[in-house]
Length: 66
Image 1 (cartoon, rainbow, N blue to C red):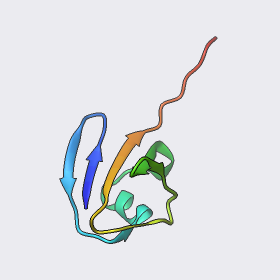
Image 2 (image 1 turned 45 degrees about the vertical axis):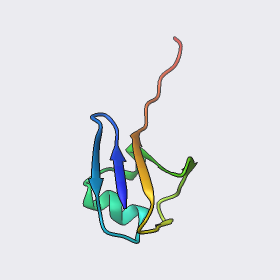
Image 3 (image 1 turned 30 degrees about the vertical axis):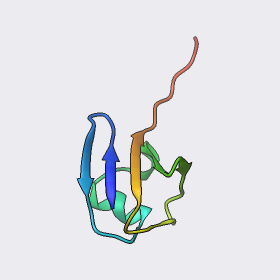
């Protein structure tokens, strides 16, 4: 599977299928600090990612007005 990481942008090729939580653990990423998107759809930590998926991992950014 192709994994696209943001901030900084980089691409990795990883074997699959695997669960989202397992992928994030291997990448040493906190599940609560990132969003995982597959084909434009936000997926949960227990979702299984197919071997041919393109997965985007984006950091969660929050903010607001004072």
